[in-house]
Image 1 (cartoon, rainbow, N blue to C red):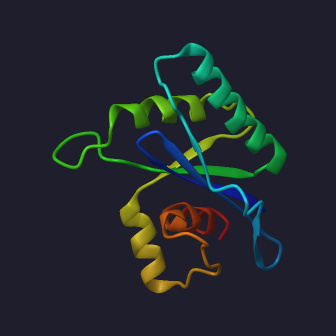
Image 2: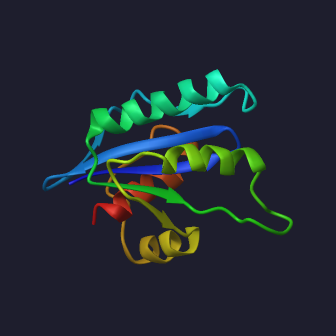
Amino acid sequence: MKTIGIDIDKKKVIVVAIETNPNFVQLQPEIKYYELKDDRDGTELKTFMDALHSYFDSISADKIGIVTRQTKGRFAASPYSFKVEGLIQLYAKTTIEFVTPQALTAHFKKNEIPLSFAFSYQEKALKLACYLGR
């Protein structure tokens, strides 16, 4: 099974794709993140969405998941991140799942992360991809 874990941080979409047949293997490790430069430029939005959707197509993932973010309060996510999330959700070939950080924390208290991440900012996306691929 191929899964893609996504962590959205402001205008960055951190992606990690893995395959679980029977071991966990990271796919395309050279891709670290996609960044939206100008969220008010329609051409930039379309280019950003097309790049993400092309990446999803190249992986042919069975599951794609996004780590949820807070919508209210002191630690609320930036408004840009919700625009980026909407662009991801427009991907029509696979249903996008949402998983809370609490669910990931609970799962990985009992289970090991089967892969290591190259950069610390990839941790949530990698955990999510592994969680979806279990």
